[in-house]
Image (tube, rainbow, N blue to C red):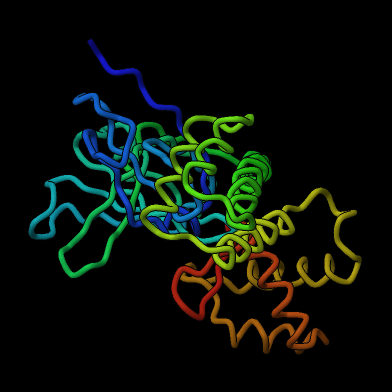
Length: 294
């Protein structure tokens, strides 16, 4: 019998990239003992995921299929959200996704549903990535709605985790507490596994919460959400980037010099650039250069 497909969860890149612990079928620390059960990645903040649904901006696509030791056909892409960047690999077993990545214009808004993967090269490090099952074009509005819903789900889970860490509950009391409320079995297992493996502390949860809140702040809910001066500053930066872009992006120092010539101070340039970067309007094709997301 074919195993039931796992639900695609929502995670921000920051939380996903901090994950180091994979639960395999039959692992004594997991409740999953079916030989056909999928592998799960457990995050430090208590998410337990096999599949993800993400939305963001494609900032880089690379054909690495001809490199030694990799699949004959293998594409590597980076997808940014307001908290960080997801790494995506698509090979011969994901033909539709590979065709998409081979032709997608960079930068572009996309949504991806895919399976999580973790790789341990043997030096103690762990690299996490996504293998796409489905990838589609999106727009800023879709990305913004993804950010809002992902933030809501993440903050709800972090609140539960914080309640546990702020209390003096013992292990049996934690299990009873999680079982007695409206906490899903997935979150219940994820938090218990995170406590066991990562020994997650309040400082990490508070830092992650701040990241999530900052992600929400970046969402533009119409021009009324920005002051006139901030809106004008961002519009000027976009105008400069559009007029001076030669295909490889504009060097930040050149942008600052051009903005200064139009009476915009350095701190205003920095603030506008950070806002535009976080909302996915512009991106860095390489360090020190900026380019429009068309």
